[in-house]
Image 1 (cartoon, rainbow, N blue to C red):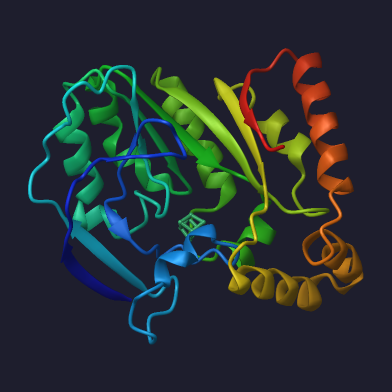
Image 2: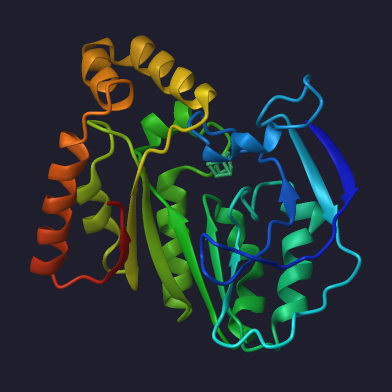
Length: 263
Ligand code: SF4
């Protein structure tokens, strides 16, 4: 793993994605998920850099919070995982949380890492925080697709611990991989410990992602090859449209809260 310390401008930036502010304490992510939507961060980097094999630790000039943040929240993170294993020693995320803990910002953490529990003491002392896990796969599928993230079963255990400590929690069922993600089993397993859910489809905008997923399917599930090509090469939305209808019906029937579902 190539680790560098790089100077960065502001530690919080306005985000069109979240409507509030976002902070990415790192560039790159050692979890190395084969479908990672953040691979566009490779643009302009050394051609030898491979996604999942480098991490830049950002060095912020200061941790000043912009004035008039109003109702805006702070989201960690959009293009990295703020609790990837390097965080255990680098503590770049913890420094950000220490800086905002007295503020009124709602801090939202989204991770695939059990290491988030290291900061449970800090979360308990914060005014407004919620912690969520992306979970979309069984341990078996995740071993190949999310090779260096915590196992989904470990994320679920961490979710339980957070809930037992009265932290607001959520589960982001994403990315939903057609015919592989068992959405309803994930909802059922997480619902006692999650305050709300979100759902997203697989975003394959980066050409490497399409290649990665199709290679995976060809290797492990050749019987799904045509179905995946229909969805991701010929843009047939039927699978995701039908699933969306089923998820909404299920959430309503079970009286479960969700804040976002893909279109
Ligand atoms: S954890 Fe998130 S940012 Fe990291 S490689 Fe996986 S999808 Fe990308």
